[in-house]
Image (cartoon, rainbow, N blue to C red; front, side, top):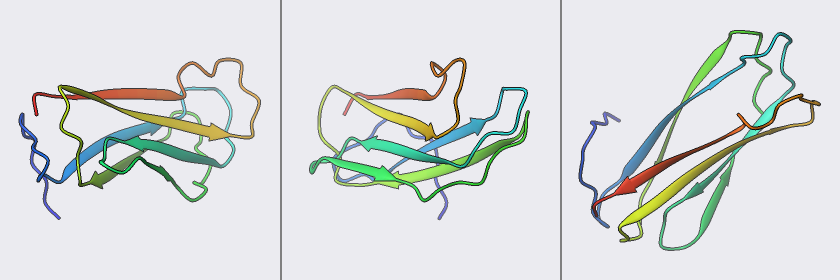
Length: 102
């Protein structure tokens, strides 16, 4: 489908989040999964199938859609990347985004 950026979402809207996953390290990543905590009426966590490893500097773009939004003044979408690879710094494996002004 075609999506357009919109400043206002309602509980009848279909929301979408566009995210980039990048390997900013110096070695190939291992396989990884994405867990996405969506702001829906019925609590839902999407867990992706295993994703192919990324080479250093490589990135992928993902677009996720969701409906049945919760009407709150501020909702956080949390995305976590998990892999079995030992990492020196895991603080960059999680991202959040706010949806405001329902």
